[in-house]
Length: 98
Image (cartoon, rainbow, N blue to C red; front, top):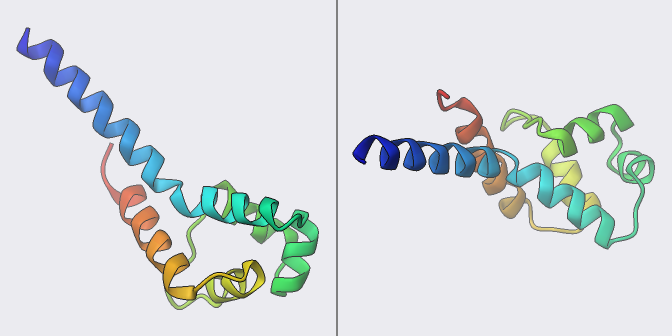
């Protein structure tokens, strides 16, 4: 019985970790779509390649000093602190062992 609960708890934590590791990606995609921008337009406005924008929406989290996050925040018209916090949460959960 306790083994079953342990397995369920581990699966739940893993699911939550995956969900939180993609927080930044989901936020960027949903905000872009709400603004009615295509990936190509968002990338152009941000001054980055469309492949890098796609990587953001796919789960890539740039390093803190990478200007991509600031460009994305400006393009999406959101506070940089908000996007930076989501990046930190996503980065932390991606770094955790499976």
